[in-house]
Image (tube, rainbow, N blue to C red; front, top):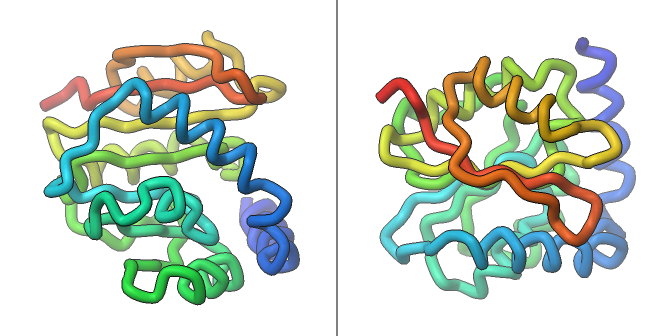
Length: 181
């Protein structure tokens, strides 16, 4: 398990300086499709798990200052901090999120779950950090996750799926809420 985490961190640290150039368009397409399904209030506190260089900040264009970008790669966060100096960047493993329970009204997790050794552990941490009235927006690569696999892991992590659909680019997407509040 630690080997996979180390490899993911190493890979993203190594690509941090050109990550935005390579993936900006893909991520913006995903954000556009995801955020067409939900509303964001400026007072909400949002956590972007695996947010890397802060592309969500680019997408939100200062709509809210209450976004926390969390990633395991220090170099990705460093690139993000260089672009978005006034925003919140936290270096943390998705299996051990360093936030109070029930802190966030929305948690965004785009194309991350396939990079964690055990999605159930990460989803339990996300569940703990999400408010009872909060929403989780998660995407995963379709080449690794099917609808039934997403339904299974979400159910095991005590989430109820509100919507499940295929994005136009490479991911399956889900909007979910806690089912044990």
